[in-house]
Image (tube, rainbow, N blue to C red; front, top):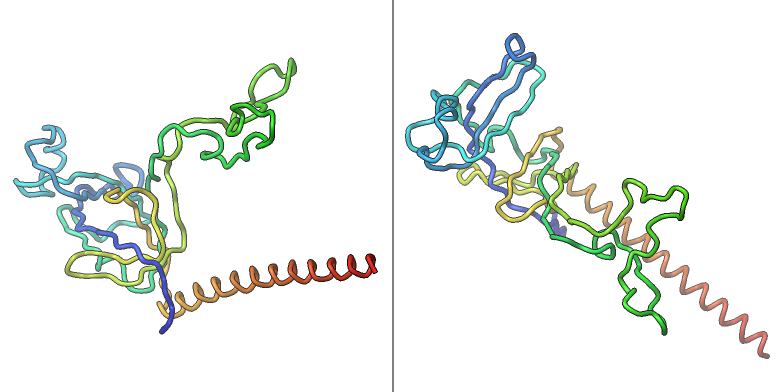
Length: 239
């Protein structure tokens, strides 16, 4: 579609090597363990070397190991390499899970969006204070879950209904619509939900943005109309 701009994030997906197959008879469920990234094999422990025997070569070991549960017996075999193009394609709807950026210790204004204290004469050092954090003698404690200052970010975040714009088979890069959680170089888990035509997905996204813009314009027109009516009433009263 011409004239449509969609923000895109480039993500390096795979290659992932199958390091273990879990079977329902032995482990109680079906699952496949995959390895991603590279590190020197001399930097891993001997138990891990034994675990990876038969799945990797003698030069490089995977940097990350992750397990993916399955409903049925997997088609993959131990040592098989999975590329991005083997799983994803144009128009795929995906769910992305990652660790959000850590922002360190933050106050209630930045962390929870508190308004802070009054910005009037007489206030002293209470501009970004949380205010009251509970009642008095009863209950005599701060309730669990009270929003206060503390460590911000570094949490598991899941974004749903992103869609694949394109997949580069040579480099293994997947172009996803919108942003993803975490810093550059962070580890993500991408799960495929379904498939649609890319043109339909772009059309739906464009329609959603247009509707949002129309609603906001309508609200501003209503507010402007109200101001005009009020000013005319005031002028009649003055006359």
